[in-house]
Amino acid sequence: MKFKALLITLLVFVSCNNKEKKTDTASNNSTVEKQSEADLDLEVYDFNGFEKFLNKKDDKIHVINFWATWCAPCVKELPYFEKLHAEYANKNVEVLLVSLDFPHLYDSKLKPFIKNKKLKSKVIALDDVDMNTWIPKVDETWSGSIPATIIYKNNERKFFEQSFTFEALETEVKQFLK
Image (cartoon, rainbow, N blue to C red; front, top):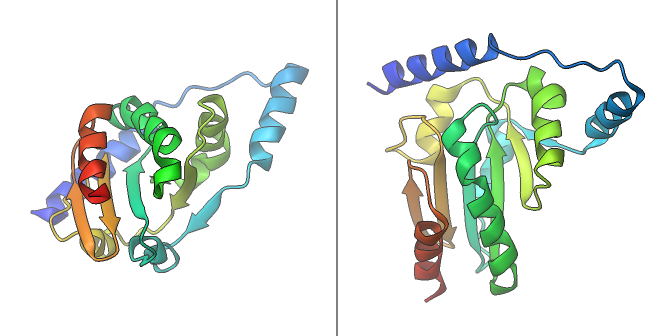
């Protein structure tokens, strides 16, 4: 069942990729903008490198959101994670946005998206094609669909395969503050 879900997800990735829009880079302004976006420092990890973010034992509340620029529900909820980052940073809450965008789209889609949306939360990219291996390591119940979110503090952990409103996200984080 999980394999079928992953196969469907992969087909969605491919079909979304074929619908990319071409952008005009003829003007000097867009060329300068593209260059500054390419200069954006994006940390890229395979799962072995990424795994350290899933298991920190530092008394902080970690909110890890798996998303992609092509995922409409993911993009819709990103402002809620940004608001959480802004309002709870002084309460030992860290937000990590884990992009599952395709590597060949980092410069043309992901980096411009990060810049245009002025994301303040830490954004990293997870580039590991062996989804059947790493998805169950994130959470045994995860089908692989996004958005997906983990909230944890030390050994206490909750996994969500859903979209959030700010209120729902805040409610879940507040349970870890108690």
